[in-house]
Length: 451
Ligand code: SAM
Ligand code: SF4
Image (tube, rainbow, N blue to C red):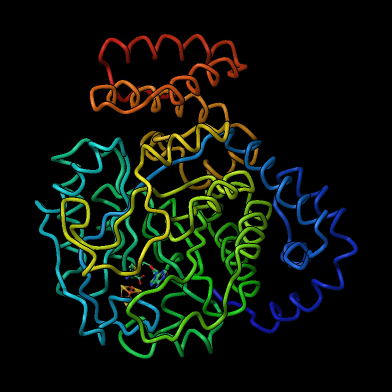
């Protein structure tokens, strides 16, 4: 995998020149077939308020065309904050002597997953620092313990890049998505930000997804940490990365995340390149229009109000209730945090807010478990075939949520209203009939029903 830095810088400059074509590009984007890097660069240059609004609206419509109204919710689960790398922006970097270090045992990880399960989550993203003492075998033992001893239906991993044989082992343990962020695709900035440890090697990190896919990970998640370099360079490079994966392996990145730099006990004095809320909105919209099949993921690094906006402007997944410290759910305090989150709401609050926005909160994990992954997933989503599954499965998982949380005194009127309204919106008669039957089975006590 190569990033042609000069070409990307050129596109950013030319993006302004291509601005006059942006209405035509938006028309093309509305077809939900993706965009070239040139078109994406032009959209990132839009400043005219009416065109900016048209960009957000088109991205929201494309999201709905591809995935329906559903917004997937998940939580990260931090395993270990031991790290031998020196990433200047991260609280876990080896030179930070202030942070208390800890690694959960597999039993601790199970305890954390159970807390999340009780809240209603069905999927977790395991996150870990890079330290050979807490390497592959350790992560696999946590994955297996969570599958074995909790009701979590899918476990994803955001962890250090590996070689192909290690990735094969990780995949064999049942992990769904492997996620890793390039941080910045701008090589000189990357080298400055990563002065120590194995992560210094830009090319090894850039090739990580080629190795992961080669090892059998059909679904991979990419992203750039916005705030290290010009956000337009990193957005365009992230899109180029996904296009590379599609060309080489027939599947786009399964997810594109937009982490924005947050305060942390770091070696940096603020963000090297401040990224504004307006720029985050553009980044989300342009990701959606450029790679329509990707889940665009917005974490709790962003404030609640902005997240509500972003799920109408192209984002399709939100994390919720996140703690960025190992053991953070079952009791550990902030002393172990990687960075401080922004949106501190509970899952129930986030879920209710998504419903109040007229969207459909989803705790679905189906595709990974029925093999709608990789090339098949990209193809089906691009053909517009996924939204009917997404909607029906979201309704089923929301119904489970409502039934299971009933005893916890949660206010469920909004959730129940959303379920009823969403059933009305199911157009396919066969799916509607089967959905009503499955909902009845859930009422009778069955669980984990899907399409
Ligand atoms: N240690 C692994 C790695 O670096 O790839 C994976 C886990 S790391 C804890 C997850 C991500 O957190 C990093 O890839 C980085 O993008 C993000 N991150 C680190 N410091 C951050 C900060 N101060 N604000 C926001 N995100 C941060
Ligand atoms: Fe370690 Fe990852 Fe933090 Fe870098 S970003 S210091 S590799 S945990």
